Image (tube, rainbow, N blue to C red; front, side, top):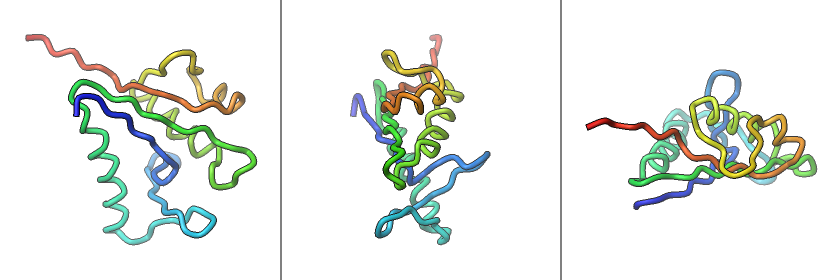
Length: 118
C-alpha cells in the first residue's frame, strides 16, 4: 500500500513508561493477562505501522467525558507519546494533548520523515 491510515484505539495504551494491551469485553476494557495475546496486540500495531510505502496517517480518536470506555487520558497518553516520538500533528491540532483534552477533538498525526541522502 502506498498510503495508510491507522486508527490507534485505547486497546494499546501508554501507562507510565510501558504499553498496556487491553481487550474490550461487555461494557469495559479489561487487562490482557495472556502473554501470547499481549504479543498479538503489540504485533498488530507493529504490522499496521509498517505498511505504508509512501506515508501514513495515525488517527487518535477523541476521548469522551460521558463515555467511560473512551477516557480522554487514555487517548491523551497515546497522542502525547506519538508527538514525543516525532509525529507531526496535521492541520490545526493542538501541540499538546492538554489543549486537545479541553477541545475534545480527534487528532491526526503523521510519522517523522527520515531523510536518506544518496
